[in-house]
Length: 226
Image (cartoon, rainbow, N blue to C red; front, side, top):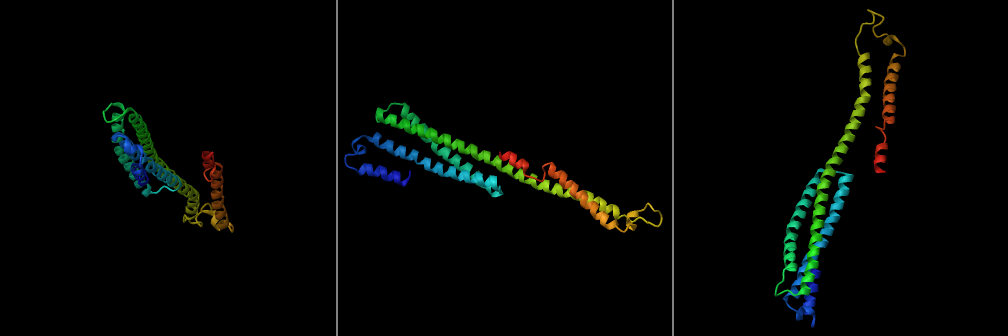
């Protein structure tokens, strides 16, 4: 129970002529139970904000440490569920069954507390589902980043494949004096610039092909954002 709720109940007890001082024990039990139940709402609100911050961090920059934070959040929600569940069962029993210590008006108030416990359980279950979903989001984000890295490495490797082939082709040690077909470009005055231009042309052609295919642009990313 929050401090301000304890102070509020104590102030009513100390106030002369207040109903809590003139009524029975059931009238005192209701505000205590109500303050205890309502005290969970600010806690869940702060946890919901923390869950939203975790979601933003996971989407922006997924890190391994965030998985541990999500596990801690799930365990915390499980602990809250275990703490709220007895309140729900107790209030359900008190609101349904008649007792000599509970008058009809107090039972109506206790039903309102029971409705609050149902809301709390729904919120906790929703947050637990969100936590489980965020783990899937984290895995998907890590996989997406890995795919981006693999795409960049694949493009670089693909660019150097024809360059390596051309370099290895002109690196073969054929004896030009034996046959005129053995590497005639080596006797050409522009042989070396031609080899460089051939390598550059292959790389440029591949880059243009990759760009038109959308591999080098954020076109797919913009489509997903829309």
